[in-house]
Image (cartoon, rainbow, N blue to C red):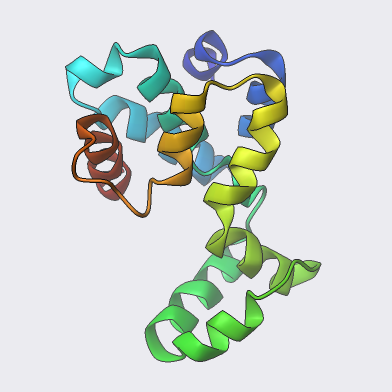
Length: 142
């Protein structure tokens, strides 16, 4: 937690802490798995710590439902995630749209444009951006 606190503003750290403990660990692990060149790039490191902040707190059963629907019923998942909501449907929406949600939450906090781009695109990488490729790779391995 001290590592995350050292990179993030108090408001950003609050968003980090609002995620489930397993997601907090995933954020830190993503940072640790970045190549050294990007681990020392403050904006890439911060994006690693915030890339899933848009999910908020996701319970394990909600994550399992999302993964199962994605595997066996993708059209049902698409229907379930078409709008914001409460409870499990809200969690499914947040999982599917977490990059955009994170950007909307972080932009008013003064998060840099580069960090917002990395966060928004971390599931749709631009192969021309080596920092984004490194973030995606670290995210996948974390």
